Image (tube, rainbow over all chains, first blue to last red; front, side, top):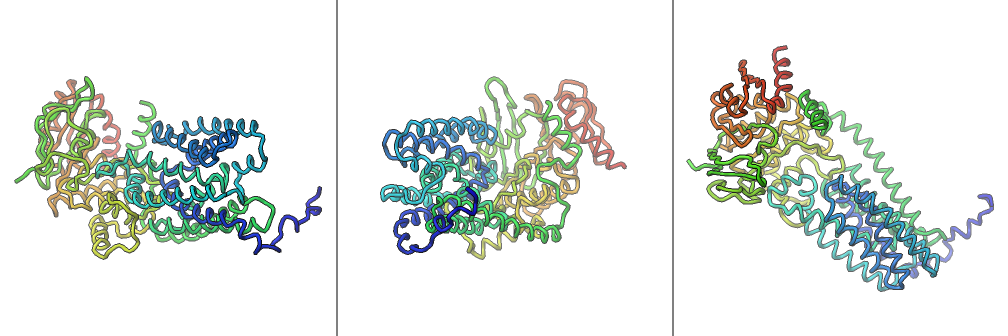
Length: 312
Length: 273
């Protein structure tokens, strides 16, 4: 079938938009809430360098959800079990970046494989299977919505409460610890908050595409500003617009919501990157001192020391 | 005169290994103490003991007359330099701000009160970071980041600054900048400085006392008394030659002190070139 033969009217049809809107009421509320929580959580995902961890947790969450689907129990509960197990494993075993990455690299394919096994055994609707990986639009029943709203509200309140110490612990763990911030508690604690966010997002946005909500918004915001109050604000605006905008666009078409969400999110990132470039040009003109790349040895001694550190 | 930091008969051991024992150290206001020693001699652990994050095995450590405890506002801490990632949502001034309120719960409020903003401005000015304080922290050079770290450490008006190799990976110009600002701080405000380093030369002109740690032994005294061939040979239990040339000290011969060797020579070459 050639492209021209596609009946575009079947794919894109905004004729009965007003009547369709109430059908996605739950999805819209869920999307809006996830936009706010995801936007804030993604700030720390970026600051703490956790995008890979998000991906790992979401695959485990997917395994939990598909297992629940197979057993005929609550899918949300299943995804919670999966992502909290992953979060605990990360929290206990590896908060250092190197350990963390290898643990995720080991866990992720296992979780994905497990999930695919469960789905292969599952005899129910095929749409349910696909939805867990890529998200779906009308899957949010009232119970799931309640769980999502309550969980998001809790994450939101707790994250706001620990914001400053968590930021301190994320950028300068040694100084923060010396000043009495409970650094060793906050790291794993944030991963658990992250696990909860992943668990409730997975139904709406899908396990494979979750980074569009938990990484891209803050990454985009960081391209244009480094202000600690503007980054979270912009990140929330970006996440909210891509979630709600994606759902509203998907409604007029027969394509799932995730391509819309990811495309809007990516477009925002591109625009921000471009703006950041333009700003960067200005920045280099005003730069006063010659830039020494952080972490790069600047003196012969430092270079020598790095060399000996590598070969003790 | 009350001591800012006081260690009495302090011992620190990890299992069977003793880093140092019988350590008595009194640091008065405005004193600049340089802590030298080979890797693993317990220099950083000494700072951690004073910070209260590492308990002593024996003896006691007091800060401003009180037993050391974690989170004291009387101590400013400047750790070893590590670069900040570009993905950090902070500008230079926000890093300083964390020194003021980073331990408090709640979100950062964009409408900070005027008093706090003035305090941050004041700290930034004190370390001479005004030109770049509004730029993203991840885009600043290593030296600029260390200046801001110093401002952050000064935020609580500490009685003592603990510096753990703050000059590492900085070029000579920035090394001098950081040393000058520490020196000014202790002269103007009587802040004591404990400065851990591998390399005495950058801080030699400002050093009051040297604490040299090696293999469980230690010596405390003015640089002229400690940095001699006799004392270091005794500390290392092997022949060591200390050459003084103007305001530079070159240490030759120690296995572990050879650690300082390449830099010292390269610096001397530079100075004489």
